[in-house]
Amino acid sequence: MHPPSIHISFILLCIISSCFSSQSTDTKPLSQNSIVLDLSHVRSLYTPSMTILNSTRYDFLDIIEPVTAYIDGYLLSLNLGTPPQVFQVYLDTGSDLTWVPCGTSSYQCMECGSNEHSTSKRPTPMFLPSQSSTNTMDLCGSRFCVDVHSSDNRFDPCAAAGCAIPAFTSGLCARPCPPFSYTYGGGALVLGSLARDSVTLHGSVHGIAPLSPVAFPGFSFGCVGSSIREPIGIAGFGKGTLSLPSQLGFLGKGFSHCFLGFRFARNPNFTSPLVMGELALSSATETDGFLFTPMLKSFTYPNFYYIGLEGISLGANINGSTAAMAIAAPPSLSSVDPRGDGGVLVDTGTTYTHLPGPFYAAVMSSLSSAVPYERSRDMEDRTGFDLCFKVPCARAPCAEEDDELPPISLHLAGGGGGARLTLPKLSCYYPVTAVKDNVVVKCLLFQRMDEEEEAGGGPGAVLGSFQMQNVEVVYDLVAGRVGFRPRDCAVRA
Ligand SMILES: *[C@@H]1O[C@H](CO)[C@@H](O)[C@H](O)[C@H]1NC(C)=O
Ligand SMILES: *[C@@H]1O[C@H](CO)[C@@H](O)[C@H](O)[C@H]1NC(C)=O
Ligand SMILES: *[C@@H]1O[C@H](CO)[C@@H](O)[C@H](O)[C@H]1NC(C)=O
Image (tube, rainbow, N blue to C red; front, side, top):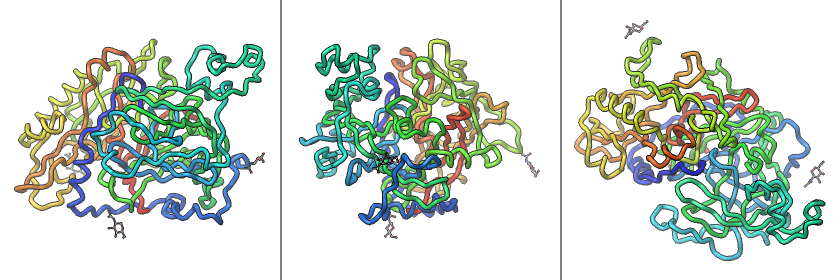
């Protein structure tokens, strides 16, 4: 989900999304280009009569997958094996390994008991390697095995697998990759072994042909039997050898996601697009309204996506004049230092944006003096968020444009003053209660980094998935930049 020392927050999104179930959600999806509209046909693609394209035959292939909102993040469907077994996994730009619950015995998840994931009576779906005709174990000498073991010596996994020295130095060791453990921030951990199998996604040749299933053979992923705090699988979208876009050949291009609002978390009728390939880049230009900021390099965490942040301003950008209240970010957020620390990590596997203590305090203080509403200390205590306001609402549903909570803008580095990204208000403030006595309580869903995180180095701040709702984000790996464009991301499925 993120490099060690960054922690994930599971706070209350289930409560939040259920707030909306009683209200009418009259969201009108924007018209999309035809290829994205084709997403609505995604479910019908996997019929036995469909031809599955062979990915190795196409140079100009774009992948377009529907993404759905979940309790605390966004999910992608992975079709693994032959015939495909389907798994919903988190889309995580803050890690590399893709894994699913897998094996013949039931999935053991420690410390997963108190959250939403385990309330259903059904056992966790498991990938069954024996049911796939194309499944193999990954071998100790493969670059994926070496990578997952993160060892300095590429022969270590084969030594651990019990190969004789002449076999592994000559590359002839055919032993399976030894079991691995893979660590996330916040003490989460998964244990498993590396398998290889086909992964089938929805592809379009040249970005214009109709979507068809495309099989990528030999995809290396974790067959995970037990974990701590990881209830379902994860698809790693980092830049490392193991990551999904890396294995499928998209790191030479790029990818984009446009996350629909968390208010759709229980609604199967809406999805939003993940695009990998040329199409992700060709549709993202300044003239289309994208703001770009350079991708920064971290020597400590080269596999992740970093950007610079120069400040945050509150309030609408009236007639192009800069907002009165701009709060400068500390220098540690606008660049990565020579040790590889600092910068802002773009992490879809972290729910809320985390800011370092003093900067967070400055933003909170400006905001609380700019907002004309009474604080709700009660909801602050109950939710753990630091700023909650009692917002008048005469008649539900109250549109977010009508309240006086100031829009929040991120001043992105290197934009010549122009890269000012104003986040959608619902991606910042969220109703945590139903409307009662003409009042709805809305909280600011940002968090401060904990002191341990700040002391431990690593990223200076984290941009989380909640703040990326209804913002199209493009990871342009050709130009080395990240682009943002606010828009309605919901597509009727
Ligand atoms: C896919 O195409 C490649 C190259 O043409 C071929 O070697 C491979 O066997 C094909 N795979 C399948 C599953 O058809
Ligand atoms: C999804 O659409 C179906 C058919 O239009 C409708 O009956 C159902 O209530 C919708 N579900 C939600 C959660 O809106
Ligand atoms: C912004 O510009 C419009 C038209 O140019 C003008 O009517 C309005 O008064 C301006 N608003 C402010 C706050 O300057």
